[in-house]
View 1 (cartoon, rainbow, N blue to C red):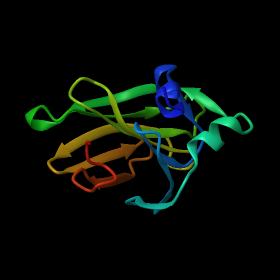
View 2 (cartoon, rainbow, N blue to C red):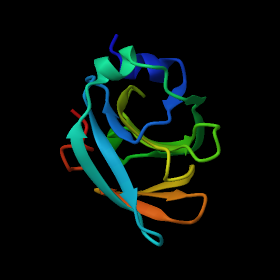
View 3 (cartoon, rainbow, N blue to C red):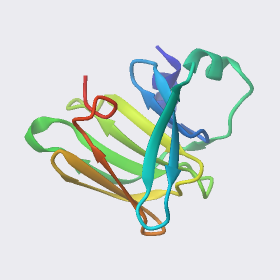
Length: 142
């Protein structure tokens, strides 16, 4: 099992600004903005190196919202990592398998996920939202 799936299976959310995919790949992620969050994805992250490095702060994944996607495409979820500032958003497949998980140490806990296909909007506890296109290759299901 790759480290991304191991962390998720243990219910851990890392305090690391990153988009993790179930295939074991990852990219740096940066949220910016005060009224509507903008997400910029950066360079690839070596997940094996990350897992082998010094321990990262990790919190228990607390799911605050789960929304079913239309036509059996799976689920969106969002929540917090129990560390106060740590938030996450993610997508599960139709069989509830992890597709991707985006963690942020600066975006605050996310409390609501809504979908108007193909757009997904996630709102944090400050009322600030980020909208993603679920057909974008970074956020699409395999």
